[in-house]
Image 1 (tube, rainbow, N blue to C red):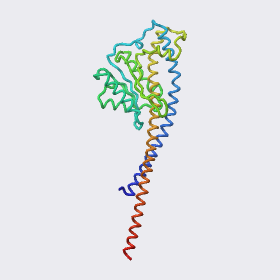
Image 2 (cartoon, rainbow, N blue to C red; image 1 turned 120 degrees about the vertical axis):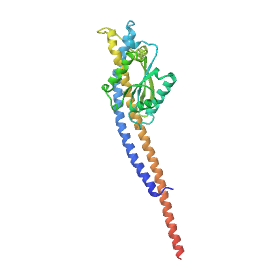
Image 3 (tube, helix red, strand yellow; image 1 turned 90 degrees about the horizontal axis):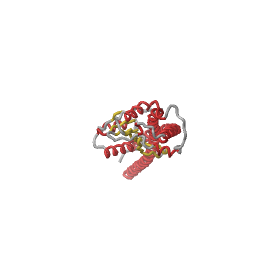
Image 4 (tube, rainbow, N blue to C red; image 1 turned 45 degrees about the vertical axis):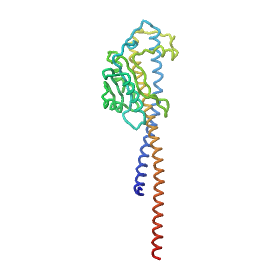
Length: 290
């Protein structure tokens, strides 16, 4: 049985750990609130550029652009969003498990795909398993702006334009609420679902006047739209990351409280047993002297 001193040391160390996890929970809650605001504020821009792109593509059958055309897939690209740090519950493991299973189900060789990854956790995961990572970004800010991701997003879209990859699918955690994040996969390129986009926004029959012509506008807007999808997913992922870490730290704090209660009960029982033992020894000693 552990001594009183050993139990007290465990209580003290667990209390210190609880202070850390509680502080991390509060920090993550603050970051989550800001990240959620960023993600929501980006939605109007994303919806408007989607509306314009869908309107041009669907109402002008003569408009042709490589990003709108589905081609034979010789090589797939996967854009994966993870975090740079752990202590976020199943935030990273969920998305990495899904992408890992998808790749091994679809591909027989590493020549058939490449990975673009955001976050140190994902980067180290793929590198350790010998999976090809063509581009990566580590040390992403907790509240990223578009300039932080612009270069990587632009280079990724250019890989499709240069036919280095024939499709691009994104894997990330979609933020639903502070306690719910859903691992999501979404095809970014080619943009083959614009008809559904126009229908979902109810703007299929909107009328616009364009200057210059629609084809020139699409050459500019389509890459920007694809980049905005990546940036929007990053904002979504960051909100999910902070929410997952807040929940994980809250659970850790609750577990620490339970452990402290159990240790305190054990300490009191051991102390009571020690006192009882001392009393018995005193009584025994007195009896021996009589």
